[in-house]
Amino acid sequence: MCLCKTKILFSACVWHHQSIFFLLLVDELEASYWNNKAKEALNAAIQVPRNLERAKNLILFLGDGMGMATVTAARMLKGQLATQSGEESSLVMDTFPYVALSKTYNVDEQMPDSAGTATAYLCGVKANYGTLGVTAATTMDNCLTSFGNNVSSILHRAKRAGKAVGIVTTTRVQHASPAASYAHSASRDWYSDSDLTEEALQNGCKDIAYQLINNTEINVILGGGRQYMFPKNTPDPEYPTLTGSRNDGLDLVEEWKKNKDNAKYVWDKKGFDAVNHRATDNLMGLFEPKDCRYELERDSSMDPSLTEMTEKAIRILSKNPEGFFLFVEDKGRIDHAHHSGQAKLALHEAVEFDRAIGRAAELTSELDTLTIVTADHSHVFAFGGYSARGNPVLGVSRALADDGKHFTTTVYGNGPGYQIANGSRPDVNDTVSSTNDYRQQAAVPLESETHGIEDVAIFAKGPMSHLIHGVQEQNYIAHVLAYAACLEPYENCRSHAALELHAIILSCIPRSNSPNVTERK
Image (cartoon, rainbow, N blue to C red):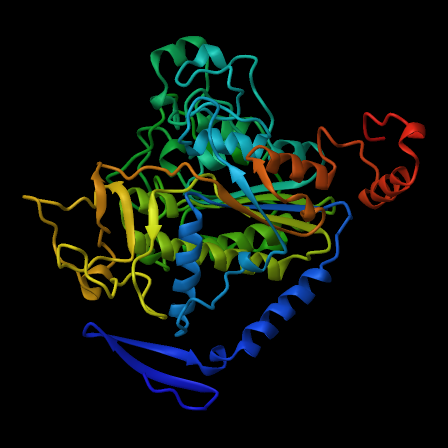
């Protein structure tokens, strides 16, 4: 490579017959560049103020399956989509001042699932694999064991405090992650009454869709999941050959609209766009029978994007003078694409997820809104191999494997991408690996790739966001949200600033004379 003394040099470099076009900042060759960059970051860190105000609004963004490898790869993809080399790019979540790690295991399982983890970060209590909104005294799939073991979510507590509340997801709204905000169930799979087991029916357990409209009054509900809201004889408005799945004959959308002011139900983009947030206090939008389509496959004339749904939700909820709680999830679908071994779909979902975070930041103030971004668990998705600066995220390593063939820098530890036949695996190139339906190669054959077990990141900004620090149990997240907004069990809190001053005063008193402070006054 030839370097010239210009500020920016566009260069085409060739390694192993692979052409890579990238933007090279010549300044990076000088020590002063990195020293100055570090000083700027250090100065910014020194000046980060602690916001001790009470949070009026709470937003929890959940990237389902968004482990650290996914965050890194999505950051680089975002940059490359903007014609940068990618490594130097930043996600919106990268700019949040406070970061911690979350331990994701369930009470009974080392490898977590989305239901047990959602119970942790939404309800503040760790639970068993596959269970929603209940303690670990509940056994998965056993209705009877759930009685008396319900735990309340941040969404429920925020509603009790007078706030507006909403859920936005790219899955069905009855799926595990959003469902933990309103449902109590021994099984995450009891979407409709037709999914209930004989034991559950005999003992009177309710399905998740029924609980969606009966447990907590939710102002905004946006995502997929039409099928579970309508009787079996009701045809779907978009796919006439499909019908609802309910045996009880209930139209849960009509049930939800009862006794609500300015309530609207929409099922397509046209209806969604027609909703005037100023004249709407309650909105339900269900855009697919089950999960929404992947962002790369979404029909923009039929279904809104995650960013569009997030914006609509904030505009409606923010009219409440007491503030709001909003849960925003992109599971659909980071998690689903990883399970399929399709990194391109997963990473484009993550980029759209970050776009929604950025739009929420534009619509709210960091002064009164605590925003937390996290994941429920990771995947056995890895991002590595020998590659030059600017190598496409979905491309191949510049080095060959020991079998003399190329391999992609994004791979899976297990899953449907296992491709070894007769002791050999296929070769691959950038053209093949960049298609939407390509499955990255996997080491172990499984029908569906598995979740990971390692910690995931928590990003935070806004009031009391400095409480996000260190390595924490996943259920800590719900307690930070509750504490920041003075919700149960912290509803009797004084102003956080006063508490901080109180702590400083106590620290100045000799320990022998210090009062025994056991609770917040």
